[in-house]
Image 1 (tube, rainbow, N blue to C red):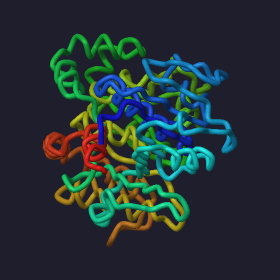
Image 2: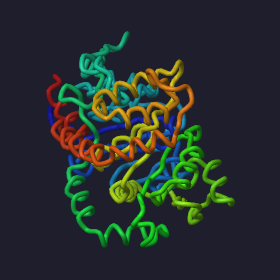
Image 3: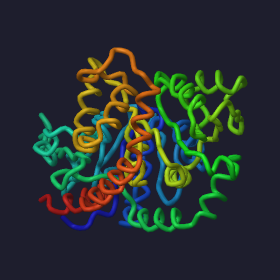
Image 4: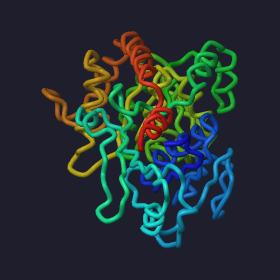
Length: 386
C-alpha cells in the first residue's frame, strides 16, 4: 500500500467521555505526528466540547487542532468514491453509513478498513488481533485491531512526546504546585496525599470519603465537576460546582472544572493516587506511572468483571491489597472475601503497600512503553495490506 494520505474515524459516544476521548487523541496524533489528513465523524459534540473547549457544538463541519470534525447526525446520506478516505476506522464496532460502505467498494484501490476494538487484557485478544472480516456482499475486507498490553496486540494509545513531557513535569515541583494552584490547591493540600477521583455514579465514594475523613493521614481529593455528584455534595454541604471545596477531619475535597486532555494528564501526574474510569483515563493513568484504581464501564451479565480480573491478573497479581480494593470498588465478588466491603481495612492495606504499588506502577509503565504506540502500530500494519 502507498502511504495513506487521508483517514476517516467514525465515533459514537456511549461512555460520555471515554469514546470521544480515545478518538480525539488518536485523531490528533495521526494528524500531528504522521501528517495524515484526518476527519473525525462524531455524533455527540456536546460531550466532545467537555474535553476540548474549542469544539463548536452546533457546527456541521469545523477544523479543530488541524483535524476536520464532522457532526455525524444519521446513517443517511449519499457518498461517492471521492468521499472515501484511504483508511477508514470505525471505533468499537459502530455501524458506519451503508452508502459510505457502498462507496468504499467503488474505490480502486480499496480503502483499508478497521474496526478499532475496545481495550481488554483477556488472553483471546492476541488470537483475534488483525483478523479479517469479509463483507457478506461487497468486495471489502475489514480488519479487527485490538489495543492491548502485549506485543501481540496493537499496544496503547500514546503520543511520541508524552513520556518526556511527563518526566519534565514531575521533576519540577514548582510547575506541579503552580498547576494545582489553579484549582485552589494550597500548600497544606500539597503536603497531603493527593488523589484524583474520576468514577461512575455508583462507585462507593461516600464510604471512602468517610474512611479518609476519619483517617490519620491528610487526603486532598480532586474531583471533576459532575463526577460522584451525590457523594461530593453530601460532603460539601453545598452544590458540587467547580471551585467548591470543604474540609472535614483529615479530608479536603475540591471540585475541579472539566479540563482539556493535556491538563488532565498533568492532573494525573501531579497526584499520588488516581481513580480512573472507562478506557481513556484508564490508559492515561498507566502512562502516569503512578498507583491507580480502575472503575470499568459496566456490561450486561457482569462481563466487565471478567475483563477487570483479566487486567488485575496482569497488573496486580503480586499486589493482593490493590486487587481486592479494585474488585470491591467495582462491586465484583472477591474470592474468600466478605460480602460487605470494610473500606477502612481495604484502604489501610493499600496504604501499607503503597511503596510497593508505586514501584510496580512504574515498572508496568516501562513495560507498556516497549509495545510501541497504537497509532504507529496501526499505520504500520495498514502499509502491509495488499
